[in-house]
Image 1 (tube, rainbow, N blue to C red):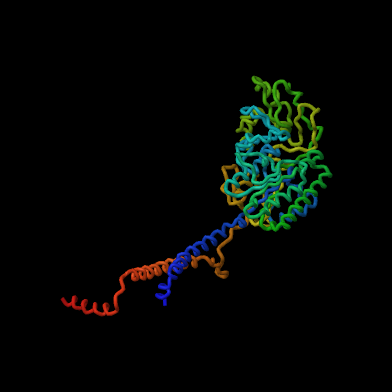
Image 2: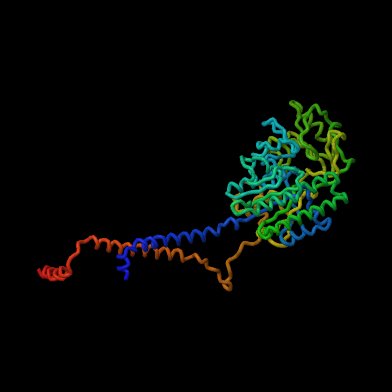
Length: 486
């Protein structure tokens, strides 16, 4: 039957089928293996900052959404942020894992003597990449690894840092409502697989602005805190509606806290030193002083012991634990006001009822930190961490290799849910359906190809030989036998 089929001309088709069989099996193997790396299974992370949200605000008034996250995930009671405790330095530390002296955003207002330029969060100078390029934020690292990032007005995220913008981002515009920012970032996370972001950062200006204007001890701040909790509730609901709540790891934190000020606690520098001798850089409570050429010692001596409510450092003498002296943008003389005190040149300047920027060891400067999601433990409270430890933690969640940083994953690994263990004998492990079948199929296909080729070549060879009468074959046998008997 087989010989007839081959003679009938279908052998090439059979051989072609046999050749394709192992290829199909290998393709099946590749498909199965690729499913394990499906983009939909890639970890997702959303980092949210409520500017100026102090760690203890969550227990000051009812905050059901914050507490729901604590029950569903983790809370850190004390987060030591970076010095100085201002908005731009700390937001850049959160996404780089670096102290300000290393990443270069040392204040909200800066002067760079090499660039001979000034930086202010209130001017377009913030869009000059040269201020930011001393570090690489997480969204850039994420994209270099082939993933996508989305940024909703995070400080620095609308700047071309190291030649890269986030995959998706909103240019900063304080008038854009929080809800609009949330809807946009949810849309980015919910996009088709080839377009969806894996890492997102979301920023909101409150309660910082209200804390400055009202002071954190004002009873009017209660309403502001409740409103922030409601905004967090909106975010949670939008994640649920999009089917993302159980898929996205959500971290809610801040850059700093806030402390109460008083018009009775003002230090006027004009009382101690002439403005003609120095340039004022940045604002209270940590002020950079750039003495005019030749006047360093004169300015320092006039300020060093001028007022008991401020510390005055030569840059080289700033305590090492503050990590705030190894950068040219840090001024030669640093004034640090005591908590609750304000440094001004005179009382004609703007006075605020609340402020931040003080020493990062002060509890009033510490931010909130809660997180939940598939990567985190549930209902877990950690005593303390450093804000620079967040960067290696986020890299771990996103399966990224962190760049050199000042943080430590070991310090915060306990926030993560335990790694899955090997199934116990009572629950047999499932054997993947693709483990042996493709290999066996490929082997059988190769054997079939070789077999069919041998038969086919034999048949073709026989067809090429001259046909002999049947009796010729019968006559040849005795001749062979006679030859054997010689």
